[in-house]
Image 1: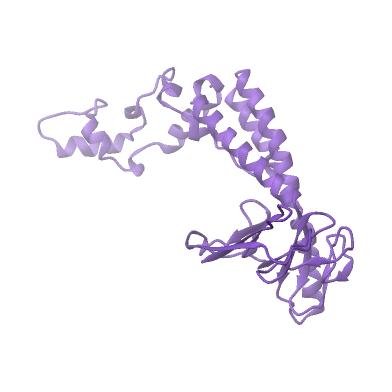
Image 2: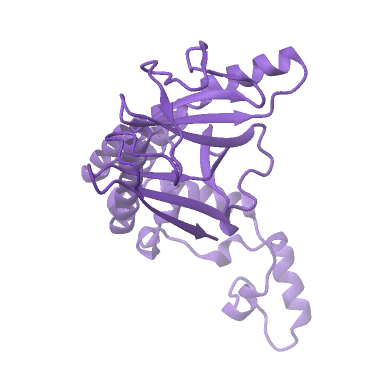
Length: 296
């Protein structure tokens, strides 16, 4: 279950949301990801080489949230140094990857617009694989229309011994190469020349162009991805990250500098822990509107 605290000052209009965030390293994206403890994320951090929680503070001077990525301290100095170096490298990686993804997806849309070949589209995605936050599989957008120009008959890929086996089972029909669909469906992968089938399909797909795909769905998916990128970049811009090893009385900036745990990594001014009992950090109003919502 996750908890969100919403604050609003009636005097100056200041608003703030505090969330119980956790973090982990995701192999799929290659970055440190924040997440809430929900039923849907119960296994989100499984197998991650780095995990922890994110403590939120607020900097009045920067008007941003200071996100403190806190993880286990460990006993070995080498492990502590490795942990800090890992977080210094991979916390900012998400912002870099999202920014690159936004630019690359727009370039990809241009290739689609000018009906680039599938081969070129695949090459573009492969060349930029490490820079893309999202993966796009061109084969997800193939349709029946994509294969209309292919002289394709599944019966041509059935092994001769499989046809002979069917012949032996039948006393009233000699199949030869004229297999009824009902018998074709009953065949297993071992009955087919899979390598030849794969080679022929791959060759055909690579000769297609963007116009042979379901471009409407592809454009919609890219649009959704661009919206996600934009929203997350906006959130990241409102965050100042730093690192804390559990039980240390100091934080570490992404540049490796040790700072007091009650100052902003960016400007060095005092940061605030906003609670239902603290005044508004902007105007000092003694009481702010407070609402707590639980999510599961």
